[in-house]
Image 1 (cartoon, helix red, strand yellow):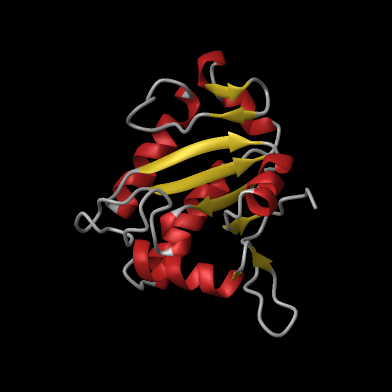
Image 2 (tube, helix red, strand yellow):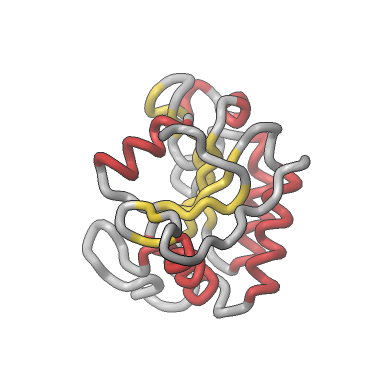
Length: 171
């Protein structure tokens, strides 16, 4: 896999996603999900990078990025250490091939998350999910989608996301 982790942006032209800068989101993720340990975060990225299909981006969404749960505004890990999950989304058409037909909200476009609720929808991704769960000490849910869904989530629904690896193409 020849994709590199997304470089950290800074300065007056820094990228923002639904009102949050990449730096704010990255700092939240490292602080909240990885206990401030940049090496643990980098190890997480390395595992993901090795598993990504070609031309697929990886992003994090949800409370690890924003610091609060969308449903009720509660802080990340409000129910105790390790209780908040990580919402990992792989963006690109190749990842969709890893999901069974029952694993889609929108066929061939947007999947349900591979999670404890739906553990059998993407068998090829189970070893990756188990490894990431173990590395982080919390559930890591893996979803697949196309780039235009990320555009809708960001611009129409106001949901920021942190690009970890690759580039989300829709603009």
